[in-house]
Amino acid sequence: MNGNTELLNYIYQNSQMGIETINKILPIIKSDLLKNQMELQLYKYKDINQRAKTILNKYGSDEKGIGFLQKITTYLMIDFQTIIDKSSSHIAEMFITGSNMGIIQCIKNLNRYPDADKDVVSLMIELKEMEENSLEKLKKIL
Image (cartoon, rainbow, N blue to C red):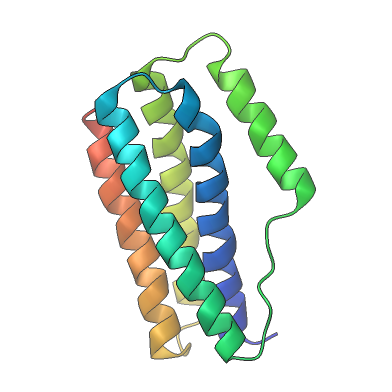
């Protein structure tokens, strides 16, 4: 697997995890402000996810989704963390933590593959910037 494929799979998996997580948490959000932010982020994740898949296919590779165990672990953590505190502030904090981890991984991957194709790097930067923008908006909900 080359650097382009690895970067694209990271983008695909990161955005897929965002989609899964937001879909899991949306039903319990009561705040319109937070719900609107999460729906906007969901839309952006879906767009990036589809574009990563398209570019992967263009390179002749198939996307590698997140594993079943990782999904179950994430769902259990969401359930555990929201069992007592379903407040908008707490949910925003959970997503801020996730976005921070995503930003760090984007930067690490960009540094790991400095010679990746321009379209792949551009999509990774777009994902990173989307996470950064979302993080800033979520800070206001804390």
